[in-house]
Amino acid sequence: MTEQEAREEICRIGRSLFERGYVHATAGNISVRLDESEGGGFLITPTDACLGYLVPARLARLNAQAQQLSGDKASKTIALHSQIYRAACAFDAQTRSIIHTHSTHCVALTLRAQTPESVELLPALTPYFVMKVGHVPIIRYHRPGDPQAAHLVAHTITRYGEADKPIRAVMLARLGPNVWHDSPAAAMATLEELEETARLMCLSANVPEPLTDLQINELRQTFGARW
Image (cartoon, rainbow, N blue to C red; front, side, top):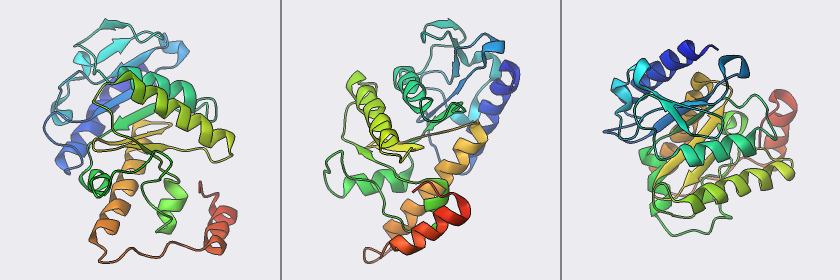
């Protein structure tokens, strides 16, 4: 993907998320890690930008050290994004895009009780959640942009990866999920599956039974599920 293609794709994905209610107001951000052939570094949505009205030329362009080169002022979450790329690429070198939203049902689940960071957002409720998303650890609340949250996220990615359970998402308590994949479109699909599963959990009158170990193992063997 060229830099220009990445700029246009970020704007397309942002508009799609906004129009379908996955993001609102100026919440959320999207980044892409550029190929070395494109000079490396990152593109990220500007601070306080509405994802529904992004302009390709105004996206923030940063170098490999996350120092801004051009465009509008970068989102304050670039420190978090750069740490996610660094940690996630150790287990999947194709990690190219990160999306952060304040998805309603995901956030709602973290409001039910204060939970330690060892707790995960959701059990293995549906086959596609197991196949497409996998484990989603909760990161305890920190203010937006807090460097400590970035360190905790990177540590969590490494901890799960070293346990042979590589993850594609974390949940920042009271804020929202960060998801990553090999393209903005694939990251969006992961986010959609995560939010839909959280919605099912919120709509359930009782805590639903998760899939059994036998059912999960069948998904691993048949589809290479991430759980």
